[in-house]
Structures are given as structure tokens and as C-alpha cells.
Image 1 (cartoon, helix red, strand yellow):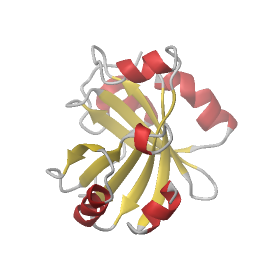
Image 2 (spheres, one colour; image 1 turned 90 degrees about the horizontal axis):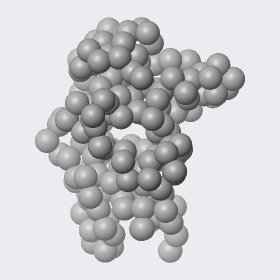
Image 3 (cartoon, one colour; image 1 turned 90 degrees about the vertical axis):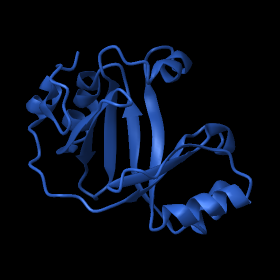
Image 4 (cartoon, helix red, strand yellow; image 1 turned 180 degrees about the vertical axis):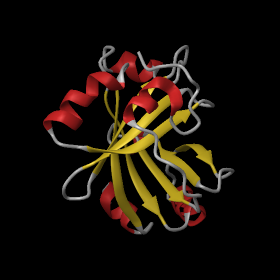
Length: 170
């Protein structure tokens, strides 16, 4: 059974592709300027050490751009594998019931990591790349969110996005 057949049983819907690089600024000329992505917002994950933003395209598809925060080692092994350039980091699928998805994957013997059920606004788990032909697959159950103002792109890159650390992007 291939990965598509396995995920179909999880009620999974593709949401976005994440692309990581040492600098988000280096990704913007391609994904925003050339390909026409419209900035949706973003912020910092200071616990794990990265900054992210999302772009939406005319057909509704999305790309998430990611970079490490200053001093973070979050992407070190990924950048080692990509010779420092970065690239596609993960594919994100939304599920309606993360607990059921985790149980189903474990029941099928899949190796999981990064299980985080503590944050009600974003519960997630990752399917190890060795289980998905070299692709890191994120399964997430988005939860309730309070409306918040979307920071400008310049504000985000200046470190003033959601949970911003105040340190500008390189």
C-alpha cells in the first residue's frame, strides 16, 4: 500500500508545502515576486527556533517559507543534507482528528515523532521521512484561534510577527 492510500484513511487534506532556507528574504523573489504569492502573515516559533510566513496563490494553494531564528540549530541537519541551500522541508496535511490519526499510524507501524498535543490551536505529529520516501509529512489538527492582526511583511521580517522575538531576519 502506498502513502496516498495510507493517508486516505486518516481523512487528511493537503494544506501547504513548507520551504526552508537560511534567509526568508532569499525565497521571496521566487515565491512572492515571480510566482505571485500573496502574503498571509506569519510569526516566530521561539521554542523551536524558526520564523515562518505563508503565501497564497490564485488557486488557493499555499507555501510556507521558513528560516532559523538567530542562534537556532533547528534546521542544522536539514541544511547539512541540502548543502546549506535549503529546499522543500515538509508537506502539511490537516486532519479532523489528530488522536485518531496518531492511533491509526501507530497501529500500522509507522514511525512518528514531534508529537505535540498540548497546544489547542495547533496539534501535530510528523511522519518520519524514512516512512514516506524521504519526505517529512506533518499531520496537524488546527484548533480555535483568536482573531489577531496580521503583521506587515516588513514587520514580520523585523521580528514583530506573531510571537516575534524582535530580532530582524538576516
